[in-house]
Image 1 (cartoon, rainbow, N blue to C red):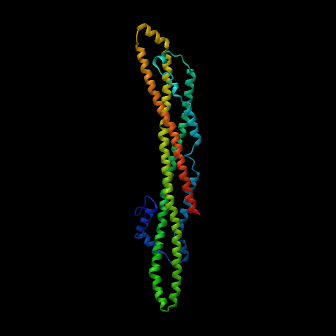
Image 2 (cartoon, helix red, strand yellow):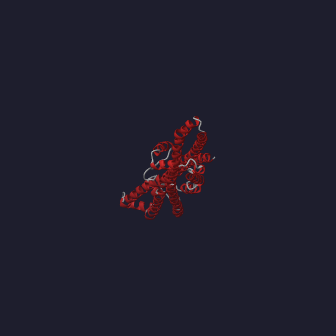
Length: 344
């Protein structure tokens, strides 16, 4: 059976049952059934052993990924980011509310300290941004691995299901054709037929046991597939959260922060309360410089508002990511228990 002739894109209990019925009419499965030598006990015991063994090892691999993956946690990184975001104070940029109050009030902060503070914040948040980029790449890498593992799981399932269906077809032949034939001969007093009948009944029991064993392995594949999907979907949600709240937003926040600091620096250097007062006395009204200052202040207010929005995006992103991470942790623990139950 080639992958081109018969494939299964999504493996669930429902799709597996429907797919199993399709296999009964497939040429390769019929060929396997015809090649089963019921006189060879060792061959009967080895039916489907290879894919079943590979699947058991594969399930251990998935279990290791579930229990050992810590990429999505990164508690320390989020603590660092949260601490940095708490150092941002929008009042540093909107300290004076009224127009004249802002122009005539004495500075209450050391501007050098303010610039140093936000330059330092910019450097530190850039380091954290780099870590988020790496985290996003690692999660994307994990998802590529999981996509490959999902295909492997399907492959093991397909191979195993072929042997299950073929063995079931051979069992059906033994039960409905061979055993009835030798039962008639045995009832007629044929002692050799009676001996063959006993052997066939033992073979039927062996075939049924083989099917039961392979069915257990088959359930490992069926249970594992949704677990892999869960991991992939969980990673995708985490990637989306990281990208939207951190990878894309942090550089814009940093740039806006630097722009706001520079605007304040330029404003303080170019304008002063005494200069404005002199102008007002000289011209008896609002000067061109005053209009320009009003425009600059309006731009600063807009910048501060944008910074505040980005700050909210990052801070809420931390909470949202942690909630999403906790939900994924619960799902991983449930998946771990399911796989451990199958191994027992």
